[in-house]
Length: 313
Image (cartoon, rainbow, N blue to C red; front, side, top):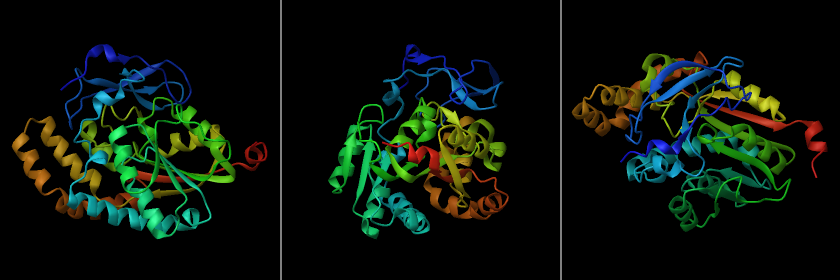
């Protein structure tokens, strides 16, 4: 079911605020078919940041997140595979996640990452999730999860040691505002960990408008390491680490979305049945991309600057 065209609005660049877009491509919702028309991917002529315009108006986003949207509903097999990846990620990040640190995950969906952190030994975790059913699923896991967003749920300044944004920033209408709010929520020397698709990846180049990282209109912004570093610097953070993921998820999805774009729906269904084997087969290519620092998904760790931390309430 597609949304009405009136729910969209023209937007300026979310990075620098300029309204001087250079058209790059037309993008359709190849995964769920929620769009009434393709949306334009543009690059800001002032700063080079890439984003969609028009975008869904604030408050209209949920029309583009159907019940079968992956983070809200995973089958037992995909849930198991994700859990394995989350455990590996948690172990790599444990020095930042271990107690007594207090952790907030923004856009926690059904709470899988928070559950893994809690099981590893840190129970002081809180989630924030705008979708009510996903938030309720997370609460059913025994997690503390609030329904809402950074704009609607109030936390005291300096409430957390670490804030997690796992494939959330690209969904937000105001990523700059979100990072400014997060900086205020962090204690002196606190960290933010951000996962985003990488618009400078090999997968983005190979698959074009069928690249999974575009996912219009749910993904409003297309970050690269350079533009994400710029945004973090401008909102009071210092980047400590940049990690390129090496599994083949982007490549498996790229093949499926290419089939969807071509109207080869039978082929897409066949590829969907072999989704996990496709990920494994594509992993060597993804690993090469990671070595070249051109993988389809990246993770940045950043810390509040001392000057900002000293100014905290």
